[in-house]
Length: 394
Image (tube, rainbow, N blue to C red):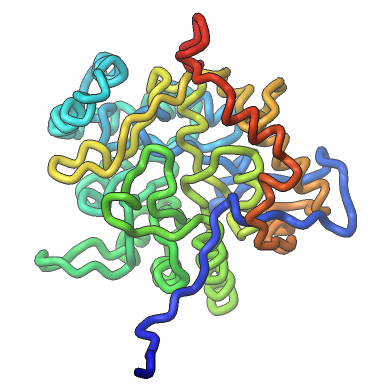
């Protein structure tokens, strides 16, 4: 009986399956330019802090801005539901594993207080920070005017999957082209993972696109829903859409790889795949200044009927400045991310992030194991932090 293939699948690659090929020339790392531009807003480093309650609060946003990056405050999290969010964050951090999801479902059922939206934004602005805030598509039309009035610098419209076309029972949903006309600040939209979805979003006039569905350390969307594309392939597809949109319009839309980045090497591969910036979550949740108290959880965790996240213990490892810029004595690439990026650009001969888009990559599933037998054995034989006397995972 003749077999007819119903549907062809193409391979997709994550960070652990590819490698960057060094360039034919090398340059000094300190000569690299890693600035990130978003519709006239220029940042010293191409790093965003993810809009998660365990990562960003107003104090963290101010500090992150002063270090050169952009932290995104979740306007639908505890910061806008509670006058004193620190008490709630302490409860979440102290809750037993068996009870934390039900606790979060109760915590996030508290209504959002519109007065707190302006209060949190003004807190960041008065502290000297660039203010970026995140809302879901369902609440964008309601909250966008409040965001602009309060003086936010960037609006992020974000959900697990966001598209330019959405079918619903409502008469008139969110139309990004109209939003861009009414909100005169850069608008970043996410998340998506495909060429066609990214291209349609760019054609609406937005300033940036977030790439990634389900790769985050605290996200279980891939397990619960089965959807997602590994980040290297997702970034490559969306980068191709950016180049096509640039060709047809002459306008450049920033691409931000969001999620799945654990080490400096992962971050460098994101840029080699076509990213203009990266968004970090669990990495930054480990900072002493992060509000999660050594824990991290996803935005979809407290869904009232289908939670798609989990609280994870990431520990508190160093100050934020050390995680970003070093110096560090750890050898596995989880600190001094900016140093790793500049060094990678140096060995690739890339003066700018745009140059990084043109470096060569290869499929290399053995990139982390080839010749590393003793390191692998050490990882498998190392005791867990709780097994070490006095160890607390930090």
